[in-house]
Amino acid sequence: MTTSFEVRDGVADESSATPAPALAARTRGLRKVYRSTVAVDQVDLDVPEGAVLGMLGPNGSGKTTTIRMLLGLVRPTEGEVELLGHAMPDGARHALPDVGALVEGPGFHPFLSGRDNLHRMAAAEPRLRASAIEQAVEDALERVGLSAAAHRRYRAYSLGMKQRLGLAGALLVPRRMVVLDEPTNGLDPSGTREIRKIIAELHADGVTVVVSSHLLAEVEATCTHVAVLHDGTVVAQGGLNELLESGSPGLLVSTPDGDKALDALRENRIPARLTPEGVRADLTTALAPKVVETLVHAGVEVHEVRRERTDLEDLFARLTQGESEPDGLSSVDAGGAA
Ligand SMILES: Nc1ncnc2c1ncn2[C@@H]1O[C@H](COP(=O)(O)OP(=O)(O)OP(=O)(O)O)[C@@H](O)[C@H]1O
Image (cartoon, rainbow, N blue to C red):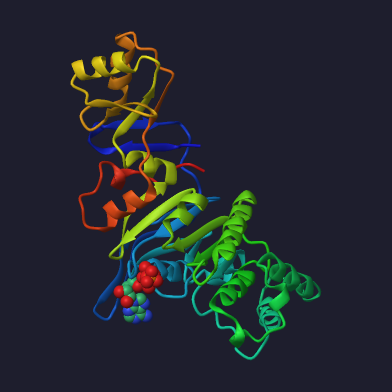
């Protein structure tokens, strides 16, 4: 599961022999300038193969521009993009047949029905035989819950139905990677749940998913990895669990000897308090191994030790509201939990 992570200032330093994961996509030094607007700046993004990477960021932080550069829809001002091993945008012809994408303005025809629009898209899929198109279209419509409305003209679709049709287009053929820009935009709660289910199915099939979202709870529920963007730069990226654990400098110790543990820690100048989950030792002044050593030395029975997690909302607020960065986030690497 965990490959490695490291937290700055020596608060913790853990690693395993697991090699770095293969990357489905990576960018280096990516920059996009529109006239006087720097939309994306110095973005080094790693998307591990098989990950569900949530791209989070406030409005205008550069998520869509980054996604468009990943897909070769926008040419970077500077920097490199590699998608499924191909340099973009020049390698688009080789990479894109394996990539399903839901991006704004997929160019559906307003006077054609949803089904006919999908037929047009399917006809342009290089990996789809003509004889397989009919079935592929019906399967994709079914998967996104649009079969009943498939005969209606696109221009009569609600925003949520347009999103579903775009998603159906991304899922017309099996993909190695699926990129979804704000897929739950305009969807009602049941539509949002369906998207979550589809993402989970893609993940179970080993497909790499990149999904941008404003919905932190969605990202926390569906993603294995997160990249947080702010003002066009990546301010944190890595495995979701590692990010949430490293954002909170607390160690939770489960023990039947709570008072004894508190005494031992405080005698050693490690701030600690009792919580419903156990004894919480503060890690801003002490390393995790030092806490454990202190407890064991004092004869405290320790049942379990784990890092306290922050929630994604707190982490996001700290990273994107101009407060100082919590210890370690910038040095968390992308090889986190699967
Ligand atoms: N085609 C364009 N021409 C000029 N400026 C652009 C263009 N596309 C994006 N920008 C600017 O680049 C910045 C980043 O925009 P981008 O759409 O990538 O952000 P975002 O994180 O996807 O935002 P949102 O969450 O609102 O969709 C913004 O300041 C935006 O106004």
